Length: 263
Image: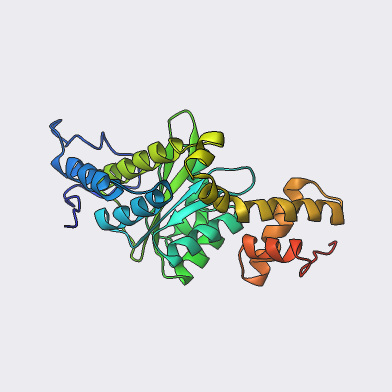
């Protein structure tokens, strides 16, 4: 059964109350139902399956058409999972541009709700991302931080084909999913424990594309005599100019199919 929070509170592009409490202070049955749905979806799942399942349950619980999760990292976020190819593509657009609600949520450590990417408010804040997202059929993006108030480790990004705000209760459910995602990612085995439990392979697989970006940045630094930030900016600029992602350009650079020239 698909459980959706009731749409009975005014839409808002801001923070909401305790996701498990209704406006009168009593327990919110919608949030508890959502928590049960989240728990049921991840029960018995292998570690590598959990992020994808949580993205899928977010789409079922909320009025969104896609979800992705990325971890914060130097230079570029590391995409962990997505509910669909289009959601993964939207995450890569933000990573390529280095801009968008995801980046803003990481910087602010609070939910960032772009309720209409064609509006002056949202299109003015992220003009290039807004143009590319709407070209892909997405009109609203909601980015919810992963982690704690003190440390943001990534974001859960939610995508919607039509403009609109999330209600307080819907934002509360999004935070529940983000909290579950944070707990699962932070509990993954590391080092020797990961290897002994067979978890090393998929964790390393997530980093393959990210490592190629770092290699490409190093090669561009050596070729052009620039710093790391400038090299990443050149990589991003080349990806944007060619209409592809940073990961694709990075692969071309390290395989010597692409060489960036001095300006």
